[in-house]
Length: 469
Ligand code: GLU
Image 1 (cartoon, rainbow, N blue to C red):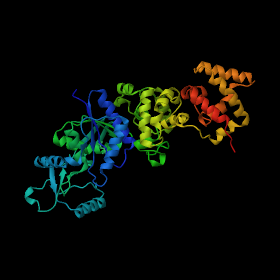
Image 2: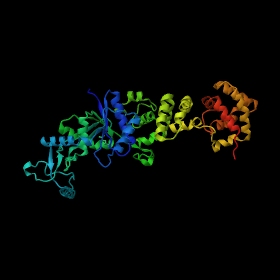
Image 3: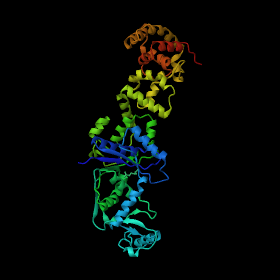
Image 4: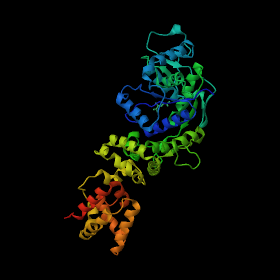
């Protein structure tokens, strides 16, 4: 088989919808696994919406998701002359015609058809008119649709979808101002770009029948179609802002790693057995059109968060640090990250445990990001009452003199607790408050090991001298 070429063809809307991201991912997986090409075309013919900012939002989304495309992004608008050329070619071949019917005449046709209970699809009187009869007036170019028979869309997801040709009208290819219609632009672009597989949302399924008319008239091979069901919210309705985030960038700022997004989006509407968590390599190996579900997928934020936690835990520490830096750059949530990078990397092994988002990971890292004197949260202040403070000041020299290893620190803390006739659990709360100023933190031993002897002792000493009103 010849080389696979897929594409994503988003219309700029100001942001990148999560559904577009999923479609892009499917096209990317399909092409990349087969040594094919994955192309990007910006469908920017709507001049009002097609601002450079709106295109940038798409490019940023693709970049963050790691969906690299071959060559440059193609502008559909820039290719308008080529689209018009194809319409004129069909005209010259007698497969399209000039239609001079005015809006009023079309409306009158429809009225009459309605009254006579006939199909209201417009039938132009100009379809077979001789050029001699053509007036000197504005015209559109319409394609001659087949009058009988049927069109079968052989869809890899939906199966064979049959449409009676008498339900297809002679659609306009070129408007009276010479601009091409969307349907023509898509077909010409896909053909010229060598697209072999059109994988897109099933809201375009009806368009496929009309687009096939153009392929047939041009005697171009029809691409393989795979129309994927849309994404719904948890209530089964089309995913919208009501359900929460719908833009790729929102998910980025919520702190989900791109790898988790890819995993979740791949799984959303496609399955490989019972596999939920998988790597890019596995997705590339497994992804196929036959695994795409026929019914709409429901977006499940909990499932995304779960996968996200698994990806964070599975990512190696240095790569995670890099991603964290990108996240912080995007969200401006931490201002001393550079100064604390080393320590965070040192502590990554425990920070990444059970963190579902980068935000949660950073929250666990607060004991590293905060400097002395620590601010103690109100909840944690309760753990630093006068009794706890005196216990801490007694404990401090024991720790100070211990070897700085997990075993030695555990041993020192446990025997201190035992000598006091209590359990280590009782002194852990005050230690957390002293080392982090918080109640929810990594284990006190992890914190001590990461902070080091000097800083640990200083924080414990600070705490034993604190007074709260
Ligand atoms: N521009 C269309 C969209 O954003 C996609 C067209 C296509 O994939 O053929 O929905």
